[in-house]
Image 1 (cartoon, rainbow, N blue to C red):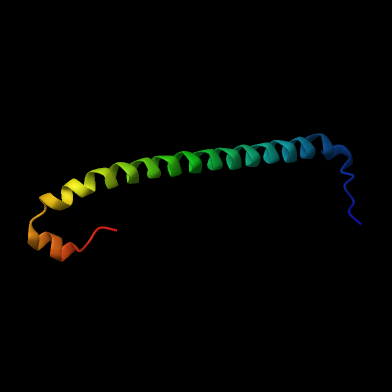
Image 2 (image 1 turned 180 degrees about the horizontal axis):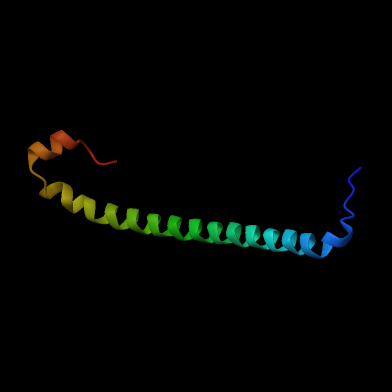
Length: 72
């Protein structure tokens, strides 16, 4: 099995493992929070764009409308 008895080194190794685990957990939580924030921001921007894009389409020259195609 695993021999986790580190005798004189345990006082250094186990706190290092603990600190590493805490840092990784904090980074994961931070990434999830940032991802949710950016998804909300993207939804807000897409909503704002769709509200203004209807007016913008009618202001485009006909050549630009046919070259770009319909908005999705």
